[in-house]
Length: 393
Image (cartoon, rainbow, N blue to C red; front, side):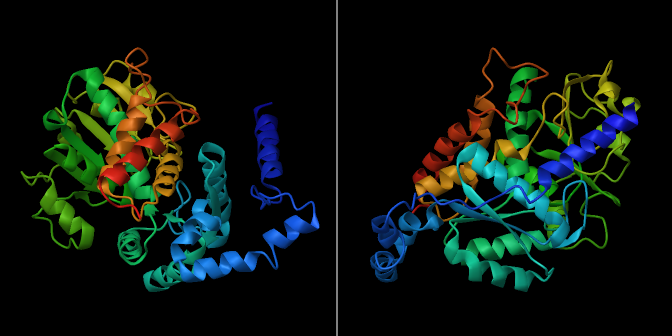
């Protein structure tokens, strides 16, 4: 019986994806010769000439006004790893579908058959005239950091690496509410992070900016600290920005008295006895997918008060869909040229604020992933932050 249900579910998934999940539709009903003459030749020529004279008109009188490129090379697809650009397309189409469904933003998957940062940067720059924003997705670290930094510097449209900043925004939103619930402040926190990839770096940076001073990060080789040999790039930065006492012990030892465990690594990493050594009213965000670092049932009877995962079938799903549609909606509406720190913090606070004081509890520190209120609230906060920080046209 169970095997038959799994087969039926698989068949339904394949049926849903047959022919792809996106289509291009006209926003204009071409129902007369007059409309045709205005939308296409000869009328379109006047708009083309106007844009040639004043390029900023492209942001209001072309699809650039509301279109985002979802760009990947398929090297770090969530839960699947390095599957390449062809196999990554259904994920990117799903992302584009959510952009349209949640925030009315038109998005298109751009899956690049190259891993070379120079080629990726150059390709995105060459196609940028069509798009109002660039959403980088599932590009492996450390190349993703260089690619984002270069594109953000060289383009005059928002560039946003969702694996980094989307995750960090939603983690920060969850943390704001978890701290409210447990009576803590950012300055009080002792944090253990497992996974120093794109998301781990971005979450750590945002926590440091919020006032957290005690963070110990682990990668596959153990704790990152200034005394560890062979570190380079972002991990060298991580070693100097975190772990002041140069802790070099085990993950279990690091968890002793810790207030927050943030997992962005692999499933099955922790067990009940690991959680038992954490501080009272501890917070656990086990965000590995599809299997979290520790299952929620392992937290029963431990000091853990707040438990979150990345799974839609469990409470407190930390899901990027709470962030990226509203972030781009707000950035496009404001005419932003980048997505800066102020805009990210505004997005996190807006998401956190969608859980009212009456709703806030251990099982609800973030709104549901499909809460239709969230994108518009986030968009308004992001647009205001962009304007206030002066990064608009």
